[in-house]
Length: 489
Image 1 (cartoon, rainbow, N blue to C red):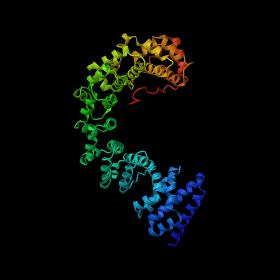
Image 2: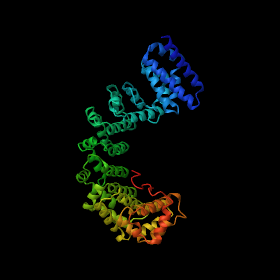
Image 3: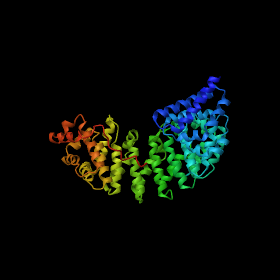
Image 4: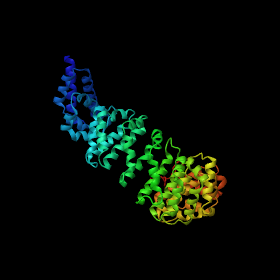
């Protein structure tokens, strides 16, 4: 017994000494070992004797302050020791004396989370939504919601009292809760059923009857994100949510065009949902007809641009693109508006076409044919010279969006053939002397992609091929240009 007493006293002495002088990696390592020894002594007992000896020499404040240490191994060892020391300490005692350290602790949520603390963390969301403590509490709840057993630990009976209280507060507070619920749904297979039983999903559905535009927009933004869960997608079709979103897109609705834009984006982003028969949903809610009406009849420029952007989101999905090619109404409207577009509308059309063309190789034959037909239907099949001219524009948003279309043409054999027959295109790619670094990188990427094609030497004239190979050698062939669509949604 005397030997063990000396051992834990020595470990306490080592910690106190190292806390004063631990600046080197070796000293940090020794400090971690000393903390781990103390944790071991507490486990072995006698607990109260060692507990008193440690806290007589090392304060909770000193331990909590180490949660901000730059070394994660040290943080873990401190958390393990602190977790043991806190066993006989109530949360109210911690809250009263160490709130500033709670903020630090919330920056470092630990996987071995004690469910008894969840109700207190939820309570911190009741403060001002832009306060430091509320932000950290929201962050830690979002992180913990991603753990496999997060739903069991975060939604205890006592926590639900605070959650329901939050859901009766203002829009900002309610949506802090909904965002955490959404994360739980994506990471816990039984979350949807649990939230249904507790009446929490009913609260979310009720947001779509809200007269507050901000609440409506926030609610719509969460729907496509949460529909990455099949369970939520199945639940969605049983609610009036889709009907409400569809109604917002209807002619004459709503009073504010920004709400209609948000509804258009929401319905479009649902094309990437899991477990949702998207084409059937669009038919039931006349979505394709409504998107054409917005594209052709809207006098609001922003709304028209949003509609064109939404077509890019739809066409990015191969299955939806197949449906659109058969249905024809939306594709025809797009090619028609492309013909007369100028300025920002032309840039958005380029972005959308780039998005439609962008597919992961190997590209299926029917998709290649669909995209070829879309391409040749624009400007009577003479789009390439227009793309080349736009790529030379001094305005970078124009040049970049046009170059992005050229890059995506290189994904297809018919596109490579089209590019190889244009000396203007080859000259454009080879001339990087006056380009910004951003545009130069994109041209190098296009050259690399073309050179990597198996039919490159067959299609391009020998002189052009040699110059393109030389340009491409300055950039790894796997480089890729940034996407220009889907980034603002």
